[in-house]
Every structure is written in C-alpha cells, then in structure tokens.
Image (cartoon, rainbow, N blue to C red; front, side):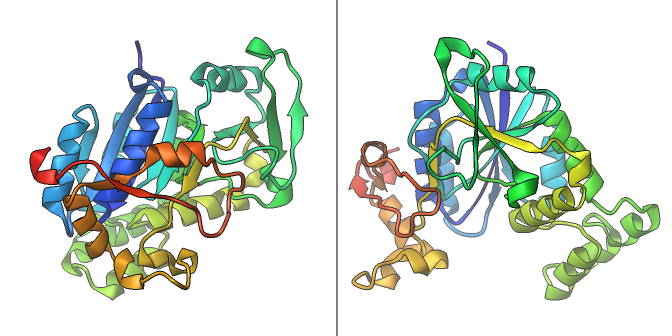
Length: 309
C-alpha cells in the first residue's frame, strides 16, 4: 500500500517521551500509510535512543548536524500527498480514519488549510458543522483560523497538503541571493560562528530557523502575514492527541507535592533505562477532553530493561 502521509518528528533528550509518541502513533494509525522521519539531536542518552530506534526500523533516522540542512534534505525527499509533524512530548489516544482525511481534502480543495487532530467541537474556540455526506455519516467540523487568530502552522498534529507546506516553508525563508549566500545556516560565516549565541541572533535577524521552535513560530507568522493567500479553514473531527508535559521545561504542570528533581531529563532517561514507559493504555482510558488541560495525567509503568531490548 502506498504511503499517504510523511511524518517528520523532532526529538532531543527525551527517549522515554519519544517511545510513548511512537507507540501511540502506531497503535492508532496504520504504519503502512505513514512514513516517519525522526530528526534526533545527539546530545545526551545516545545509547537509549539507539535502542529505541531498533524497535522502529521503518523510521528513517536523521542525526542532526545542521538543523536547517537536515530538515530541508528530508523535505526534498517527501513525495507523499500529505505531511504531518510531531514532537516527542505528545501522545495519541484516539484515531481518525485516513480515508476521511483524504476525502475532506478532496471535497474542500479551495478552503482547507489543514486537518487538525488536536481540535474537537468541545475544545475549539469556534466551529461549524459540515454536512456533506461523508462515509458512514461521519460528522466533521471546521473553523476559520484567520478570524479567531488560531495558529495555522504547528508541529504537533495537523495533516497538511505537502505542496502547500513546501510552498509556505520555502517562501518564509529569506531568499535574497546575497543574504542567503552570506547569512544562511549553510554559509561559511555562520559555520565559523559554531554554536555561539551571536550565530542564533544573526539567523533570527535574517529569518532563518535553526531548531524546531523557530521553524514553527516563523512559518506561523508568515502564514498570519499572508493570510489572504492561504486557505482559511482548519477542518477536524475529534481530539486525539495531547502533550504529556512531564519534564522540568514545563514545571507549571507539576503538582506542589511532586519533586522537580524527578522530572529532569536525566531522571526520566534513568527511568527509561530501568524499563519504565508511558502507560499508553492509561492515557487511552482517561482520554483528555481539552486541548490545554493543565496538569495532564499520565502514568509510568515498568515494562523491561533497556539492556534487554
């Protein structure tokens, strides 16, 4: 069966969370329809990551050397009809029929920007019911991202047409030939700057991204500034993905009785090495109902030791 969606995932220092993402992704969506690429920054926990990657041999792993170059090399290889992005701290807890997504794009070619997996009629700011005779009388909904100021471009869980995403990303870059030659991430000057803070300031000033955060924020800003050139609606059916915010970069989600030391990347990687995993069954049973629900609930369960993988 031909792949329908290319899924580009970003990860750094989170082997435990990434395994939860991949386990949940392939539980709810058919592996034969998805080609997953993982851009992995080899900073810490290489052994843990290598063991994890062996469990998912169909994933194409890119060890980050230059984020911009690595990302564009993947983007050039993508030949599927649709593209999806993922980050390592989200999990899926429900599924949506890919045929429904494909049919939605076919029926609304002029006004669909993307098909969101992180919205539902209960958590969307505003929505309209679409009655158009979908298979099995399934309901779908839409909302105008331009009117309600919803982020149109995001790296969590929205299915986009590949040609639209490529167009946005290429246009959002600074394509002035002189600027590109001197200040792009692959230029001699930028390479000479190494990992200095000044390097990031230059890249940011000239509109180049160097990590997933500016990739998302700068392309989102380009979409907002060029809204009249883009389809106005995000379509969706139900909420099926949520962020599992358990490490200390998200301390707002940690309860007052919990020890912050237990949520460092080092502590979580040690848990992973000891065989602990996110309990995907628990998340599926206790489905989230809101996109942003504060202290999202999760459980770690001991399954195996990484040395035995």
